[in-house]
Image 1 (cartoon, helix red, strand yellow):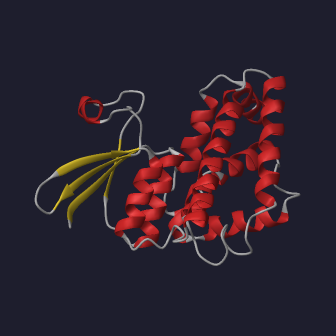
Image 2 (tube, rainbow, N blue to C red):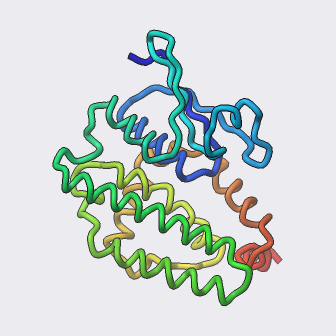
Image 3 (cartoon, rainbow, N blue to C red):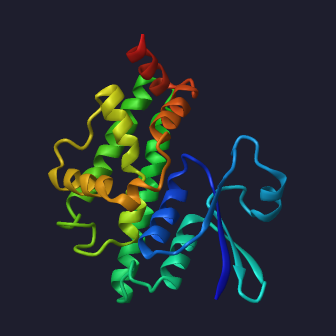
Length: 228
């Protein structure tokens, strides 16, 4: 059906990781190419309506070429061609899963606000907002994966999110999950999953910290003070 799938990526992008995890869980082969988002190549800008990653170039067996963009449609495309097991068949359950995927995106936006916070007051406000969201997840997360025994697109959406907390805890001792036992257990299972772990390169932690340090924000200054 498809001759080639090429995923345009960035080393750090959590939305790219969702697509990578989904394809990996379903055993779908694809080529991954990383680009520099601070100097986007012309060929990428020519085919991307948004100028963002992920972007999936699809070449059909008949030679037809298409471009898919935005992480949710790309993940659902992988799910559809891989058997459809990562979203519920029931319309209500499927809609609920999509809603929690959107919730994960909103939480990523709060995390972006945290590492962009210009001062301690804004930083603390973001921490409080993220904590509220994490407590909401704690109340509904399943015993194994988010939706029970089956790994779904919801897990693929949250797995990349928790990587930020690895940095926050290791470098700043900023602990927002310690008193949320169900969430902490789920996070640990995601971190131990080989497909989730393999969605980023071995140097991801170093790249992420370098990105945070370069921003000149409250988080940057706190990281610098740890090294001082």
